[in-house]
Picture 1: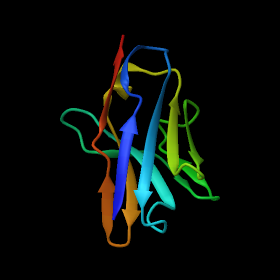
Picture 2: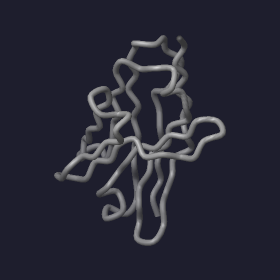
Picture 3: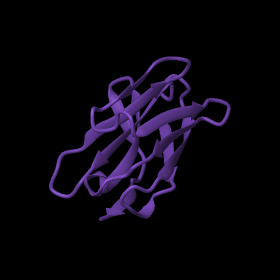
Picture 4: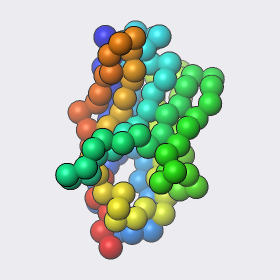
Length: 115
């Protein structure tokens, strides 16, 4: 079992920045890899970035160069620093923890970028 709680979303103008946080609790094996996904209205949920404990990070092409994922392993927290935000980044952002054959998700947090 994994519990994920996101915070930090909101409304920002294009070119602005936001930092999302996700606090994870539960099975330590299952929170070794924590990621961020997003889902815009009418679109499928897509990967934004993923970070593995003391391991590599991976980004979607849309996030490279603008977003940075990082972890504070002592706090079981993963962050997503989003810079130079664009209106097309508007979506609900979800924290994710893959766990054996299941996926755990946070409640989702809205990010809205105005032009």
